[in-house]
Amino acid sequence: MTARSTATSAAASLGIVPFNAAEAPAPEGGYAQAVQIDSVRQLLFVSGQIPVTADGQVPERFEDQAALVWQHVLAQLRAAGLGAEHLVKVTTFLASREHADANGAARRQALGAHQPALTVIITGIWDPRWLLEIEAVAAA
Image (cartoon, rainbow, N blue to C red):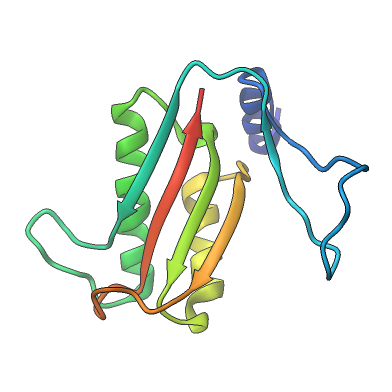
């Protein structure tokens, strides 16, 4: 069994399945993504995961910040008894479009084959040292 099929079957057993109904009109540009959760015992909202270490330091490189933020997200999931495969929605706020490719690589590294619904927002971030922030929703 591949990593992708393992993550897919784990998510499917929780009732988390990609949902792209043929009846739903495609938006301008033809892209639509949805996740349907058939049965939920637990919802976890992971908010404000920022690239700051326990001692208040912010790594300078984007890749290091992204790894740190994903460590924070995964730690929140573990604390709730959940894993990356339980993520159904991830919103990443990036300081600049220049970080888009590295952001995708960091997400794939953290999540493996699991592919929750994604939103990437290019925005000014409150602290100019932060190059990204992640908010997520998990379900089990």
